[in-house]
Image (tube, rainbow, N blue to C red; front, side, top):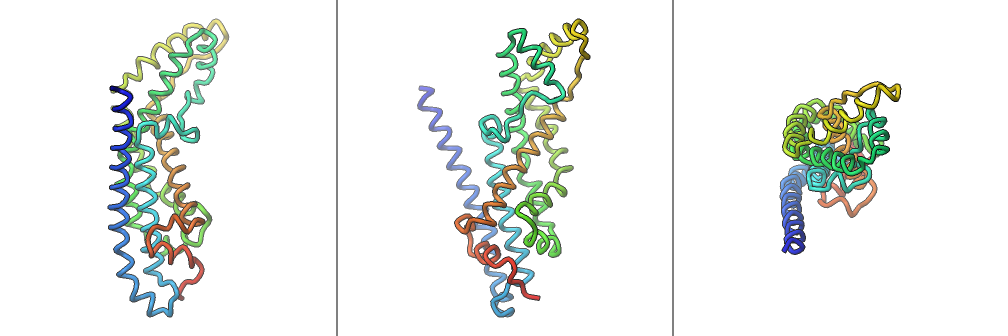
Length: 254
């Protein structure tokens, strides 16, 4: 029975994600009509209003897709670039415990870290979308003519504090839900018992802060991918406004 339920669950999740993305595309796509008049008035050149609308549209679509991907089960654990490993500050713990034959405990612990990040990522979309909506005209023009991840870096600067505040409680709840301390406490306790005899110091890693930061970093990896894709691939520009704006970056009305 389980082998039938798993594909069904994945299919349901995929359909739900596609439906949400379609709804977002429909909502932001409506801005194309409001910028048509200003485009004509500028002799076919891009108006400032069109640049701003197009960039915001691209970012909302990309951020929504990225947040959905990150929040999916396996969004971090199955992605090599997003996978959250044993904390760097405690790599010496991992090495020592592997020598003690605690491979399963290490693997279980790392899986729990990634599940916590996936739970936290569910909070990302409204925070990032709010930052996009508050973007100024000057921000939009500078970002559009910036490098391949200029928008992503803008969002990182403007949303990291909000994401941290939203993610950390979710991480704390997720680590409690999967009983993360049941992995971390025995690991650190075992390590700290043998550390003095090996001439090493004990460790005290703030797991919630570590997972929160890694979850945010992973989200921006995905947002950066979406931005690069929209900039370079015409097929990724899923609305007429995106096609016009990103196809004529330097054809801007003065």
